[in-house]
Image (cartoon, rainbow, N blue to C red; front, side, top):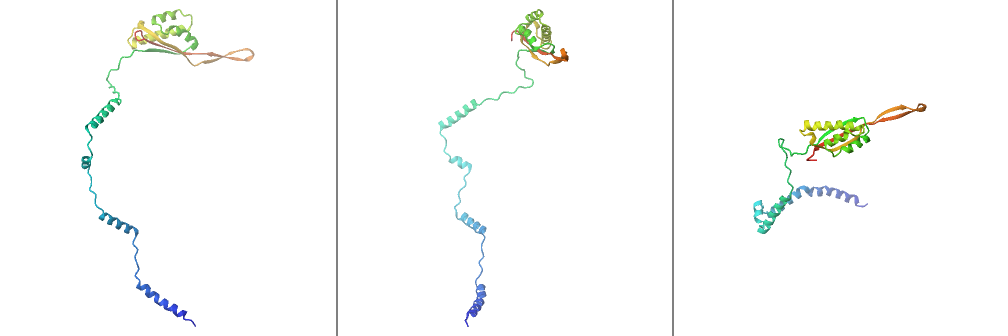
Length: 212
């Protein structure tokens, strides 16, 4: 017989007594230890004196007189080069006088724009008296429409702008194409041929002879 069981029993009996004798160590949290270390460093570290703005300005080296003069000159040049804002006009302020442009327009005239252009090319740049004479003796039918439009523009200048009709000049006269009317005409073997009835928009502009 061996003494192994007796040895194990003796060890088990001694184990609880040893556990009771050793006190348990408490672990400190990392946060508490780091906070305490920071407080200790703050207490031991020397305190730096606070610098106020007045002290900082006093400590800064003063610029020499020529440098200060150069800085002022540069600032003045920058102000002079900067674009000045345009002044706003008041509601009651007078606007500068501009040459009067009197315009008249006739729309949906029953003639083609090409035929109307052949007539207006003769009166463009002429005075009112010369244009009246040209239109009176022009052989084309579009001359009647241009004559009526010229008289309408002269009336606008006299009544709306207080100008003299005989002292005006035609600066611009042009004809634009208008909508085309579609009509049909019967032809041989039951066919139908389209007829295009074209229209034009006539416009004329008058100005005084002095400004033209």
